[in-house]
Length: 65
Image 1 (cartoon, one colour):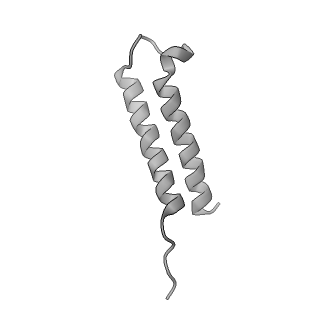
Image 2: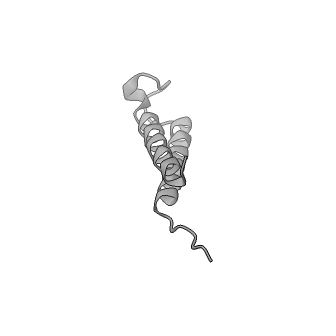
């Protein structure tokens, strides 16, 4: 798998984790109303994974000498 394809997978997974964590209460998987620390942690992890994917997709390839 190329690094660009891996980056796309990271972006998709990160956005899914971010969206599910922020919508946990609406989806019925949250334990309380409001955003708790677990949801915030999952949202931050999802955002970091997605940003890592963006880095992998858009970084400049190393030039061969």
